[in-house]
Structures are given as C-alpha cells and as structure tokens.
Length: 301
Image 1: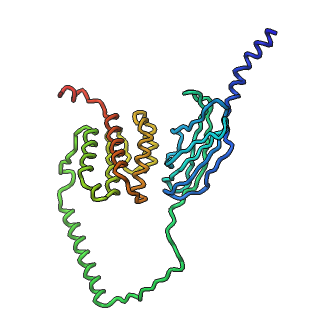
Image 2: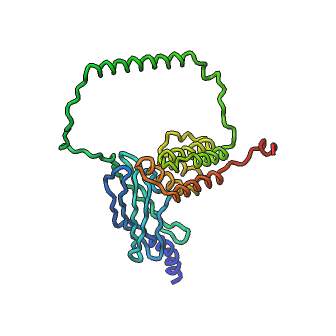
C-alpha cells in the first residue's frame, strides 16, 4: 500500500501539468486585406477551467496596428477574441498573436498563432465607360513659339544656377553651426516651437504631424544613436521594442504613430484632445529617458 501511495503522489504533478491545456478551436483571418483599411480577426480559445487567458502584447506583429480588442468568455473553458486590425505594409505580411494561460502573474502555457495575409494597395476609381467629352485641343503657332521661349529661358536659368554653384565657396570652408544643447532640451524646445508655429490653428494637420514625428525621430537619433530617418512606423516600433528603457512606452507610441499615419496618409482629421494626448506622450517619454548629466556638466554647476 505504501508503494502504491508513493506512485500516486509522484504522478500527481504530471497530471496537473497535462491538465493545464490551451487550444485553438476556431480562427477567422482573411487571406487578403487592403492597405490602411481595417479588418476583423477572430479566435476561439479552449482552456482549462479556473485559469485566465491573456494576449501577450509583445507578440503582436509590427506591420499591423490593433485598433480595437474585444474579449468574451462564452463558457468557463472557452474564450473568444476579436481584433480590429489596421495594416500599414504592402505585400506578404504575417499576423502573429500569442495567447497565454495564466494563474495570477504566472504563465503556465502559451499558444502562438501566425497567419499570412496579402496586403493589397488601395484600389482607385476606374470606370471604362467614361469618355472624353471636351473638343480636341489645337496648338496654334503662337503657342509653339511661347513654349520655345520658355524652354530657352529655363535653359539660361539652369546655366546661371550651375555657374553660381561652381563659383561659390566650398561647403567645407564654411563652419557648420551645431546645436550643442542636450538632446532632451532640443526636443522639448522643438515641441514648444511647433505648438507656437500656428500650423494647428491653420488646420495644417498633415504638416503638423510630420513635424511632430520628426521631433521623435531626431530625439531617438540623438539619445540612442539610431539612424531612423528613413524607417517606417512599423520598423521604428520594432526597434523601440528592443530598447529596455523604452518598453513602458510601446503601447502609447504605437497609438501615437498609428494616429499620425492616419493623418498623413488617410487624411484623418485629429481632435485637439488627441493632439494634447500625443504631446503628453512625447514629453513624458523625453523626460523619462533623459540621460544623466555628464561629470563635466555637474562640475560646471
């Protein structure tokens, strides 16, 4: 009897281990989607009763922005997830999400689902039935001579610019003025200058957000020595995820960059509360990641 008792005790942890299950029972992900057009992704997860299922935010694909996430516990062991996804890349992409089975803060099991999606460019209006109704354009002799005259003027202007450039002093002989202020001081002053520029009041929202994102890029370049001038928003987010100091700001920066791309590329009109929240995000990131003063700066104080 004692031997049988010890055998049952030794098998108990194994039984408990295999009782912690996490399975995908249903998945609805489109094979194709349009660039910058939201679409829906649904998952049905079966899990061991008594545990909770959560989404690992770090696992979400950088080529997509999660606009909305809905969770519904249909039964004690079934949970459905619905994501409203916005793609920001063209071509073959992969939507990835990891579900975690948790007990408190402890992760007991994980399930990763990756689905390829073909992102198509936005289609434009094309109607083969449209016909030109204007009368044919006739080019008169005076118009031909006007074009010739403009071409000659343009040629002389190009020659003038070329001669002026060749006779100008070399760029290396002119001392370049470099801003030697700390990177956080430069970034905060640029934000204040942008707010005072009048672009927002003139409803120049696209130029405003292009400038605001450039301030973030320049700060990251000065602070972390990154060359991010040519990176897309998804590439920039992927780089930020790898920097431990910026981890607390990943979700906020994802929202900021997504809203900025909608203003720049989809002609979305931001509200003043949205703008203020984006400004708060950038200011807080700059303050939280401000490098400590160097020994020389401490001594000068």
